[in-house]
Length: 451
Image (cartoon, rainbow, N blue to C red; front, top):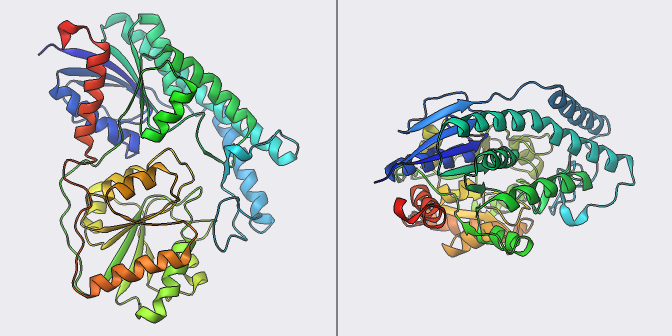
């Protein structure tokens, strides 16, 4: 087998626990089995990747004054909101919406800046963009040094943050090596944007960089069929393929308690991931089903577990649930988290307004011995995945539909039925997706003699 060499530019890489790091931790291991060696330009702090044939070149993200300025504007915004009692009504669809500050805006709702708030969002977008430039240029400089002394078959960029794509474009331009872009999330075509920077400036800046890097790439890798279709409409002449995320690890084992129904959500609660309809559905169901802290619990795992500045326990109290029925457990190491999730009879995916992406946790959920409840509208990539395996799905704000699905699963559990994984062992499996990625790269970009 001929040795092939790739230069990868990605902000996230192991030991980071970010989704992009998990993806490329698996992909580089699978690539080694196919005869690939990697140089990785990353912000990650450790060179111990656990993957043979991988050399890490760290580019630290400097504490630049632009980063501090962008963070300061965000802090000022939140302080103003706190002084004003939490802000206005969110633009996300939800029950009990009043009193929670808006966290996302749909790109279709963005308007020409006419208010002070609009101008602030444009300024924050510009600062966020410029604050990423120092790392982007430093990564590009490191990449250009590497291509000057090494032979590479491909240069790969993975985002977000998508500025890694521009670093890779500059290295590819300097070397003539084919460029592959791994767009794990949409860039300029994203459906919803964090409210703090949702603006015309954000769309203009991202679209400008996106056009530049897509024009230079030889292969564009998208994460879902919906995202690929959206990009094909804008860039019809670009070679594209879909390679989703997937589960990586041993098949989880069932450890369901006999007399307590455990539901769980893993991950941050932010943007439009509103847990309140779920909590209200549990409160609606509790009296008739006799739910108490002794026989039911909903657990939240994650570093940022709060919505609108309120913890799940506080939101549960607002919904009328008794103490102990909702717990926040904070972040855990991956192995420990998976061990605890094996106890869950039900895994919940909170809604996200971004219609083209699928949270990486969804693919993991499908390999656990658990029922999966997705709070998703029908026109989303997450709905596509969940419906393909028979998961329970409800509209995000439909409290009664959520309660009906919970009622059915709790009744089954009490009757002695236990859930099994919704996905086959080889379905939505990260090493299989890695094979698909490199098959596409090798068949499209490598000379016939190297295959």
